Image 1 (tube, one colour):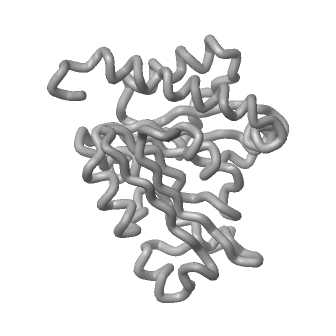
Image 2: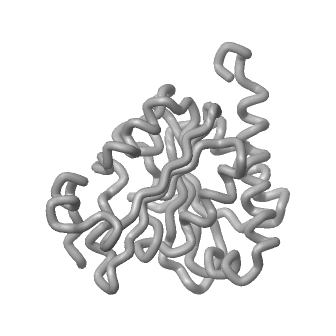
Length: 201
C-alpha cells in the first residue's frame, strides 16, 4: 500500500502547490460547505461532483492532486486532514458534506457516512427516490470519527459521500446525470435545513 502523508505540514514540506497539488475555495454566505478533500488525480471526479452540489449558493472546497504520477501519496486521511484553508472553512459551516471516491468500477453506488444521521437519512431517501443505488458503508468508511473533516463543522456532525468509480465515470460522460445527482443531494440538504429550528438555519 502506498504510504500517504499524515498531515498537511508533512505534505507541503515535500510537495509544491500549483505543481503537485492545488487548493480551491469559494466561501459563500451559506451554512453549507461541500468539500472534495481528495480530488483531482487522487479520487478523480470528486471535485466536479462537489462543485455541482455546492452550485451558486453553498460554499465549496477542494484539494486536488496534480502530480504526473503517484498521487495516492497526497491522500491525507479524513480524520487527519488539517489543511489550514479547509480547517478554517469547516469552522464557519453548520453543515459539512464531503465527497469521496470509492474504487469500485463494477457497480454504480453511493455509500453514506458521518455523524449527522438526520441529514444522512434525508439524502438517502432522496437518492433512493431518484433511482440511485445506495450501499451500506463498510468498516472504515462510516466516517464516525469526530475528527473526520466532515464532522468538524460547528455542529460536530456532517455527512460523507463515497461514490463508486463507475458512477463517477458515468457523470463525466453524462453531465445531465451529474446535474440530477447534485440536485438530489441539494434537495436532501434543503429538506434537512427546512426541518431545523429557525435559529439553526
